[in-house]
Length: 172
Image (cartoon, rainbow, N blue to C red; front, top):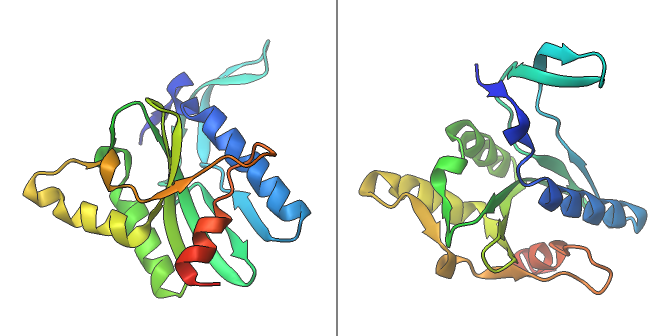
């Protein structure tokens, strides 16, 4: 099993932005989306600071978020990269398998990506991710920035309105 340490909080501000956005969606009855905690088993505890200093993953997690948008099931993962591409090594086979099964049940799967080099956000549909994943065997190890089509802009209220992209894609 893998071990968790302080590197496990990478992308934390991006996830905070997504969590804030999901709270706005919930408050306005637009969607109900929950963060899925990664199951860990503590190994070392710091009783003085009430923190976990070392833990291992109990099982493979699926995706970061799951929920429903106006009757449509969605699941997605959040990825952040400082590169000008999204490294496919940041996505695990069990996540691809889960999102594929989710879509076969008529749900919508995707990834939200934050590019740190220019502070932009994108919605990556699962079909595009799956295509890139299947092309791994041909040598391409990442998805270049130029391939991302669905940019998400921060709203005037400083939330990441990814529902606009979902609405455009499903045609509502």
